[in-house]
Amino acid sequence: MKQVAKLALEDGTIYQGEGFGYSTIKTGEVVFATGMTGYVESLTDPSYKGNILMSTYPLQGNYGISKDWFQSDGIKVEGFIVREETRYPSHRQSEQNLSEFLDENKIPGISGIDTRALTLNIRRHGTMKGALATEEVDDEELLTMARTQPRIEDIDLVDKVSVTKPHIFGEEYKNRAVIMDYGVKNNSINELLKREIGVVILPYNTPPQEVLDYEPGGLLVSSGPGNPSRVKEGIKIVQKLSEELPIFGICLGQQIISLAFGAKIYKMKFGHRGANQPVKDLLSGKITITSQNHGFAIDKKSCEGLPIEITQINLNDNTVEGIKHEELPIIGVQYHPEAGPGPKDTDYHFDNFLEDIKKN
Image (cartoon, rainbow, N blue to C red; front, side, top):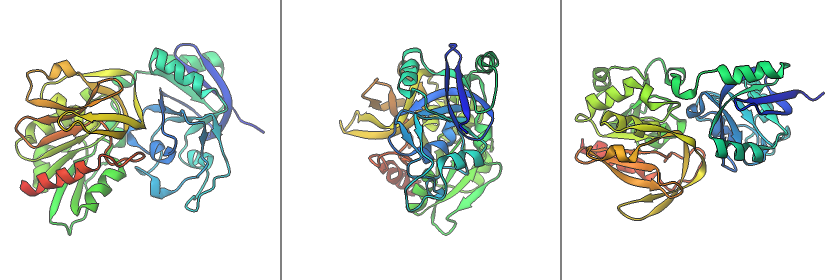
């Protein structure tokens, strides 16, 4: 027997489809991602905490689930919306199907709805609060749940995805970096280890002096979910250590660096989520295709008169994609050079970070 599922949006729209995964009700901000592959990486990306994710590519689950593709210890999205979900994946590494994976992580999924129409609705009106039910619930009750939940910009999410104690990898390596964990992805850790950079992953609220106690050669300010303005601990870390260590910020990390030097952040209409965003480097003129997942951006005008320089822009909407400090070895990028999922055009940033560590 098919399981009926419903998705309610704060604008009053209710979509009905077929449920899969776990039988429950979840709320969150409904967003869409445009990647044709990479659903495992997206589902396990900590930056999606607080979001109900919709894939614009219609078929999901076709190559199954493998732990090798995880970006964290499990699913971080609040729910998953697809046009078509397959129960019979085909891939030599597949360990289970998509529905089993969601059920194991207690996450609901809905299929069989018009994801094209939903995407157009979000592009027209912006991201919306939603509620996804894979168990029986009255329409009005579900709408009330969607409308009365707090907005994602008003929620602290980093503490829900950060480690609670230090984790150390690659102790045998000469060079070492501290990662401030605001929702770091496994690929970022692996990119450092591939370059023989030892890694110390620290909780989001670690004091600056404790960071220095590990004697790192550099600091990675990680990606993560939610409103960067609420990550006060991260802003303080950058301010305190900006003259002590080379600093590299990814996504949320770039926004935290910008806030630390006085820039402003704004919430985007529907954000950038996918593996095909074109970015132009303003110095070289080179264009790269990037993987992105963010709903906030740096206010370009607010950078005027500050010691940070805009180095890269998005060619679709001219938003800020890269920054650097005018004097200190501090850089940030809005996209994901670790590319999980996505192209590998920009992994050179980790090579540059290694060079900065060696010079420190």
